[in-house]
Image 1 (tube, rainbow, N blue to C red):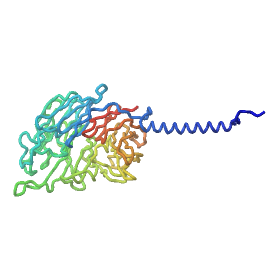
Image 2: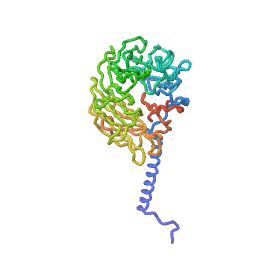
Image 3: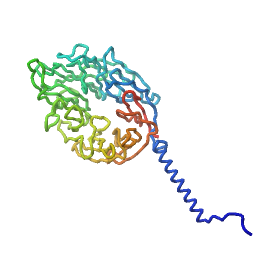
Image 4: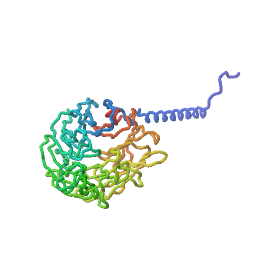
Length: 458
């Protein structure tokens, strides 16, 4: 008799078929897991949006930036200063908004105040004048606000030389329990005469009560000021020529200097050239990136396209510089989100071109100016921050896209990658900077988008 059943499958054939099926399922599973991971849908591998603050109004570019003070994120614009709550339950809610009176504009801010006081300045911009700013013109009013509710704590007037606000001027700062404000009594024509006078004045941060007044060295005026833990630092404009036949002052021979004052008394501790190798004239661009230790980003022209990071010891002794350009790539010093300083280390994103824009993460020793370590990142980087023993980097999707898709964490000691996470939700861009607060990443966008967006690990 003949059997009506088909041929029996051998054990070897069955095992081969099962193996093929298992391999196929494993491949499908791996692809699925990769897709889920790359899109932020795997626990322990993702960054998810916790909340978004309301969208900002479009801006015409006159913005003073964003920062975090205690549990409040602050947005400062020319037309208003706004506080947003960061703690659970507030979730980016607008807590308060301060609008300057009349036609006045916000024209200055101090980002280093303590967790309870916010320091800003406002004024009305006037036209070009040959005399000191008239009453009510210029960036002349300093205002202290309570961070929690925006309530005005005190106001003080400062002497200003012109009715023009001046781009990049950093004439006030705060730290600990003091606010420091630069006063400029000089003639608006920049003449350097014996009658010219500039000073730094310290006030109690909570009450506005005067603490001390520090005169500047001879023929020097304040350019920027920043408050450290032990000293108050000022970039000074010193020297210059006499007035000409029509009474207009000359800046020929003027040089940028660096000075430090005792934060308790205002006494001058030291005053040194910005660069001990060659003078820096007033066209140079200087950004105070850190006060403890003192680190400056210095460009020898009106921008920070090329230049050097200078560092100083507590006694004013200059340390070896760190160039913006090197074997590591190019540091975009004009972008505050490209560098971070913790202790005696500076961490930087250095860009280079290789089938598109790419980046290296580099650590420098500020005491020697030497490179400690560097790692080439798999993806282009948008921004970094440093906290404790970790460096956090926001990574872009590819060399052809600026969309932020990844978060990387690196060991601050040796650059080893410790964690990689993927954003499930779009990160509003372009971003200006980001902060770490309460385990969350707080991303600040440019005007017109979401003011702040918080992401948390999932």
